[in-house]
Amino acid sequence: MPNQLINEIKNADKSVVITPTDGSHKAWLTSQLFKNSRKSIVVILKDTKRALQFIEDFLFFLPEGKDQLIFFPGYHILPFKSLSYHKETSTNRLAALSRIMNAGSKPLIIVTIVDTILQKLIPQKEINEFAELIIANEEIDRDGLILKLESGGYTKTSLVEDPGEYSVRGGILDIFSPGDNYPVRIEFFGDLAESIRTFSPYTQRGIKEIFETIIIPATEAIITKENLPHILARIRQAGNIAGLLASKVRHVVNETREFGRFPGIESMLSIVYEDLDTFFDYLPENTFLILDSPENLKSYAMDFEEKALFNYKTTASESRLCVEPDSIYLKWDKAISY
Image 1 (tube, rainbow, N blue to C red):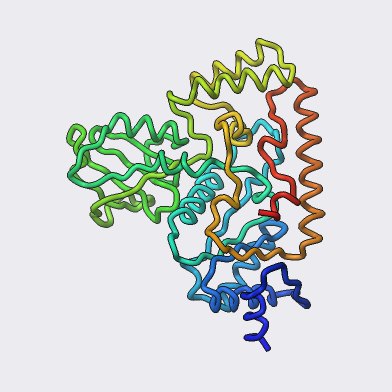
Image 2 (image 1 turned 180 degrees about the vertical axis):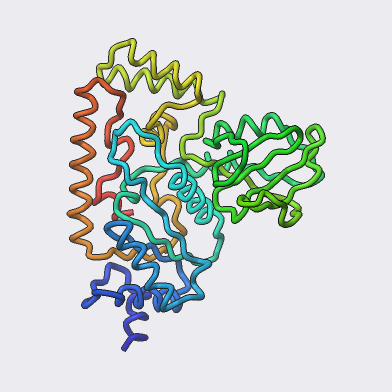
């Protein structure tokens, strides 16, 4: 019976509803489908608690699938709050997106939550254009690399301990790129990367010399000197639409020009980029989509959409910078139709 069920799902050309699917049944069924289909699967659950429980159950049934499992987290900040996203969440999201983009033909099991699939994302081409391959004993513009780290949301620190941080000490540049197990220490002679080695973020001692490393952004809001004028123009446009006083718009513009960003810019990506991708744009072709209790997910998504609209209206009424919800969020029905 299990093999027959798996085969029916694999060969189905439309959605399939299976009951009962309580408890760990969903994780078991997903593990068997993943094992037998060799295709990528996306599992959408209501919230992070359920997602983490599903991951635990899935790995119990298929521990060898650990290297192919990706959790794509949500930000857990309500829309239009003037708060910067938590650095750890931002770097985890970028690491997940990068892994999905570079998986090639390798099947993935991707676990995520409702909020995440509704939120539009950084375009894939922006991550590709930012990605920097650094090779030992080859030249790279050191000062340009540091500027790139700043534009990609990296934080300059005295000691690099967490993803999304970098430090400079003379000719030594330490970088902790999202998704890497360890930060890297690059020793420069001028613009020549003489050596690259991983090091412990706890002891700061070197671990292993490596030949090359790839640096990806630490935030979805990449702000460069090339796209800054367009971002400032979109800030002014959004301010005018929201009816902000010229002085308030000028404050945000000056803050962005001086510091490279303003609090909460990650939640208004339509200001940063002219066009955005969706979560589904990142997925491999022929990916299976598994919805955990579809009606419950839809109800939760409707609540999320109402909160987004309410927060937008509240923010606009308080004369704070905001963007139209449709520019940064998908409707539930459109999301699951991809």
